[in-house]
Amino acid sequence: MNREDELRERITELKKKHKAVILAHNYQIPEVQDIADFRGDSLDLSHKAAEADAQVIIFCGVYFMAEVAAILSPEKKVILPERAAGCPLADMAEPSALLEMKKNHPKATVVTYINSSAAVKAESDICCTSANALRVVEYLPNEEIIFVPDKNLGHFVSRFTKKKMILWDGYCPTHQRLTPEEVLEAKRKHPKAKVIVHPECRPEVIDLADEVTSTSGMIAFAKRTEAEEIIVGTEIGMIHRLSREAPEKRFYIASPTLVCPNMKLTTLDSILRALETLSPVITVPDEIAVRAKRALLRMLEVPRER
Image 1 (cartoon, rainbow, N blue to C red):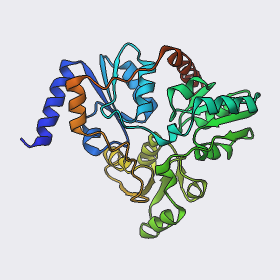
Image 2: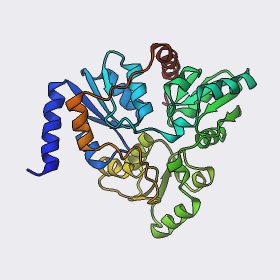
Image 3: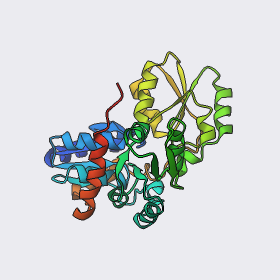
Image 4: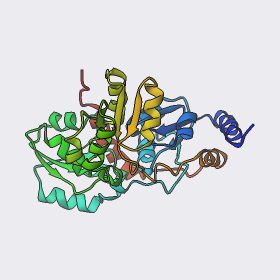
C-alpha cells in the first residue's frame, strides 16, 4: 500500500469514528475532490452540510465557505483543514467601508456575493451566488443596487437589468488574470471547442465566451452540449470535476495562470490532521451570524429558474 492509500484509509477510519462529512469545492486538488463525500460550489456544499447526518464538517475550501457552513449549521463542528486558506476577493470588502457606501446611497439595497466575509454579509440586505445573481437583483423591488464585492460579476449582471448597479471595486485575482488574448489563443489551438467562462472574469473575456456561468452551470453545459471539446475559463481544479462528470468530452484550461493558491492549500495530509485534532474549528460570533444568516435565508426565498 502506497502512502496516498494509507492516508485515504486512515481518513476513512477517522471520518467514521467522528461521524464526519468531507466537503470539497470544485477548485480543490484532484485527490481532495476524490475523497470528498460531496463536491460542488460553496453554497451547495453548505446546504449539503446542513442536511448531512454528521456531527463534524470537514470543509475543503476557503475561509468564507466554512463561515457559511458554520452559520447554516451552528449545531455542527465546522473544520477548515487549512486555516490560512483565505479569499482575496472576500478580503476586498470591509464592513466599515460598506456602511459608508450605504450612507452615500440610502435608497439602494445591498446585494452581497457569497464570496465575502460573514461580517460583510451581516451588513447586507441579501446574498447571491454567481448562479442566481441576476435573479436576486431582479427579485428586489429597489431600483438601486449596491453590489458587493465582485465588480466583474456585477458588471455581467448589469448587462441584463435596467436597475442602477453601484459596483464595489473588488475582483477575484485568479479570474482577473485571464486575458482576451489567452482565450483567443486557446480558440486558435482548439477551433472546434466551445468556450465557457465564469462571470468573475473581466468583461472583455466574457465577450468571447459561448457560455458564461457558475461552476455548477459549467457542469450542466458540459453534459448538454453537443460539442466534444470545451475551453474552460475558471480555476484549473474545475477541469478534474468536469472530466468526472462528462468523461466523454475533452476539456482545456483557457490559461495555465488560472490557479488559486488558497484553493490548493488543502491536501490529504491536512484533512487527516484535521480529523486527528478536530481543528481548526471555524465559528462566527452570534451577533454577526444572526444578521448574516438573515441575508443568506432571504436569498433562498428568491424563486429558482424553471
